[in-house]
Length: 120
Image (cartoon, rainbow, N blue to C red; front, top):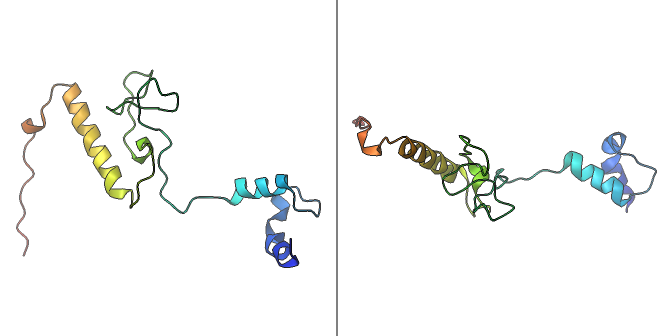
């Protein structure tokens, strides 16, 4: 480790135990405190069958083993998509509203139409 590395780390040393040597424990501490993703947060409540021990929700966004609880955000994506997650997250929310309406016997067609606005 070069001295420039040490100078870069000095402001952060007080938060992690540091004995003058860069150790795996020190690096792990720094990563836990200062590490973060530059991507959108997602994929923490994976959608999948109940037979998959890593899956949290089913294909109707219901949490496995818990009644009346759904997850309707980007966290249900099994893997990170290649583009921005905003549109996908919006569509997951839209699908959740359709699934909830269907579960309560309300058809999508029975909702009043959205008024058409003329743009100038």
